[in-house]
Each structure stands twice: as C-alpha cells, then as structure tokens.
Amino acid sequence: MPVKNRLAEMHDEITAWRREIHANPEILYDLPKTTAMVAAKLREFGVDEVVEGIGRSGIVGVIRGKSDASGRCIGLRADMDALPMTEKTGLPYASGTPGKMHACGHDGHTAMLLGAAKYLAETRNFDGTVCVIFQPAEEGGAGGLAMVEDGMMDRFGIQEVYGMHNEPGLPVGEFGVAPGPIMAAADELEVVFHGKGGHAARPHLTIDPVPAACATVLALQTVSSRNTDPIQSIVVSICVLETESAATNVIDGQVRIAGTVRTLDEGVRDMAENRIRKIVEATAEAHGCRAEIDYRRGYPVTVNHDENARIAAEIAEAVAGKGKVIWGRPPRMGAEDFSYMLQARPGAFINVGNGDTANVHHPAYNFNDDAIPWGTSFFAELVERRMPAA
Ligand SMILES: [Zn+2]
Ligand SMILES: [Zn+2]
Image (cartoon, rainbow, N blue to C red; front, side):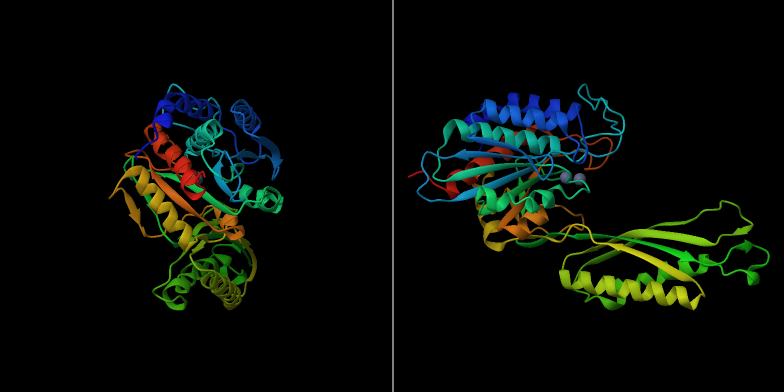
C-alpha cells in the first residue's frame, strides 16, 4: 500500500501549515509562534497529552493507541527551527523576516509530523503509545540534547526514536537509509597565535605570527593524510585566517584561525583532537609564538541502530514501493543533533526525497510540498506496523 488515502486527502491542509511556518521562521530556542501553532494543532487533533517547555521550547505530544497490551512507546521527531540567513526565493509565502529563513526544510518536517499526529489521533489503529517530538534549536543549538537532558525519554517512556530529513536531489517518492554512522561529529577549532607586532620592513624585530598560522594550517592537513586510517573518514577545514590589521606594512601581533573537524567515528574524533592540539602547540612554538587553542566539541556522530535502520527501510519500501529506497547510502560529513536522541535510545534517521530543489542552507531552497504524503505515510505506517493493533 503506497501513500495512505487519508494522508493524501490531507495534503492541501498540511501544505498550508507548512507554508504558514515557512512565512514565519524563528531560530534556535526562540520559537514563540511556531510552538504556539504546534501545541494548538496537537490539542485540536485530540492528542492525549501536549507537554510544552521540554528542553526549553520543545513539545511532546502523547497519542495512545486503541489498546496498550504491548506497553510499547515510539518517539517520532521533527525539528522546528529556521536558519539565520536571508531568503531569496521570491515565493508568495517567503520569510517576512530578513535574516531568518526555513532553508533546511524544518518547516516541512514539522508540518509532516503534525499531519502524522492528526492521522494517528484520528485513527489510533495501533497497540501502544506514540510520542510526537517537536524540538527546538537543531541548527547549532543542540535542542535535541536539551530535550534528552530534560529527561524526555524516561518521562514519556520512549523506547525507540525515528527522525526524518528531506533530501534535495533524491526524487520525491524515494527514501534513503543506512545502518551505522550516517552523519559526522562536528567540532570547532579556533586558535589565536600570539607573537610580537611591528614594522613589516623590520621583521627581525618582531615575532610574526602569520608564518606560524600558515605553517599550522598546512601541517593540520597531515591529520587526515598521515594520522587517520585511509579507510576512515575525516575532514579538517580551516575556514578563517585573519589579522586585526588590514595594512600591508604592519606585522600584526596576533593571528586567528578557525575551522571545523568532521569525523564518523568517536575514536578518530579523539585522535584528531589530540593530534591537532599537539600540531598547533608545537608549530607555534617552532615559530616563537604562543598558541591559545579553543577546541569545542559539537554534535556527536549520528549512528543509526542496525535493526531500526532495517525496519525503517522496510516501512519506507512499503510506502514507496520496490526500488524506491536506497539502502546503505554513504554517510555525509554534515551533522545532525538527532544524534543525541540516538545515543539515548535505539532508532534510525531516514531521508525523504525532496526532488530537484536548491540544496539545504541555500537562499533559494524551498521544501517540496510534493514530499508531504510520503513523509507522513512513513510515520503512520511505521507506527501501525511496529505496534500492530490487536
Ligand atoms: Zn540544516
Ligand atoms: Zn536540517
């Protein structure tokens, strides 16, 4: 059975919600309009419990099935936050706020999970409990972690969790899922090299931090080429190199470099941090400078649990049909804070095709409303198959 008829019927309604969220983007934890809309809709659908303020501005809706002989509870998660960037789509429902835009499709994720919640509260054709999880601050604020640290999993008795992200380039009506690590840990590195400034024509009277910084940028590339098993994945990108002075005849007293370190394995992640600290310190010292290192650990590796990834693939195939689910797709070096929920409970993160759109985080990106029946049907089918009604 492909897309569920009832969900196909709801397509226009869910599309309208999606566009309303799109027109009113909010970022990080500061989501007053979005959370008010989500909570109001869940109450209107007759969801049994709607609890706000989990992990600051997260919401959990509890939907009980026709029966609860199984005693089981599945969490379904969507993210609600937008990005701090300016929209350039020219759409009639484009962001009304410069500097805020739903450029990652979280408007679509939220609308799809609302649609699934409406369907599940209407039909309740399952044995157990569903928690619909709407999280804040996926884009850099670790809202998923905030909800987990707020005790969400225990408080609601969530036993397994599933999340979904749209994927530009993957045709609408198709899914992608893989077992094991699927997205990277994202750490940030910032180093200030302290030397001694002076006149650029008398370098011998200075301690120039620029060569120290440049040598370090190059030396850091050996972390991937010389220290990491070639079969493993790592990215070390230094994206900033700056002095305070813009003058061409001044040797500045300090230089700042900053970048990102992406890994797919916690062991490689530890090794990389260790090597980076040593290389930075030793290279600075070799140039007579002092390095001040700020290494910040961000989201951990997103690891799908093998069994749940296989289940997600089966459900996706039941919805989309044979040949429409890419199994074992290669991991990406982007990061996702659903990783924290997957550390707390078994589960899987799946991609739903967004068709031929601009890529996520691009000012011309727009979530493809054609994907809605596929995403909502996946969630509904997952619940009905994982917790079949007696
Ligand atoms: Zn994003
Ligand atoms: Zn996203």
